[in-house]
Length: 119
Image (cartoon, rainbow, N blue to C red; front, side, top):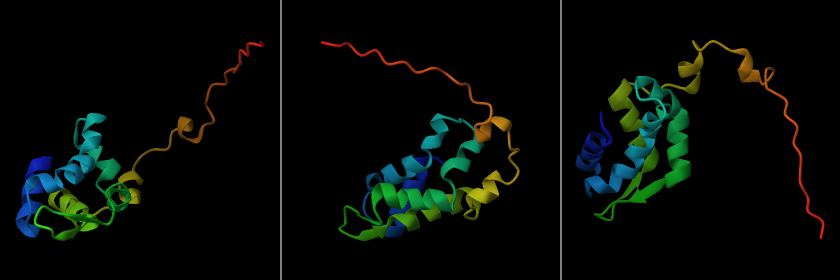
């Protein structure tokens, strides 16, 4: 679902305006910018993503009706609407092959020089 559709569902449940919830739903789906297919969900559609939503937006927001709403609840409902459950990061990563570059063993060495102008 697109962020505005998630926001509409949230608005029907908690009141307020759709705009009250758009920043959270846009954040959860923001990984589409980097990966424009369903794999983008691996980044924030997880229990870790719910934690990040709380860190970014706080544990509660106050909607335009003055009602306090849990940001974790909003995030969890978004993920359940998309996936049917809330996966862990392990769920997303367990089938990902481990490549040599991931451990940093193949990193290139580069010389770092500093130019200091002496007065």
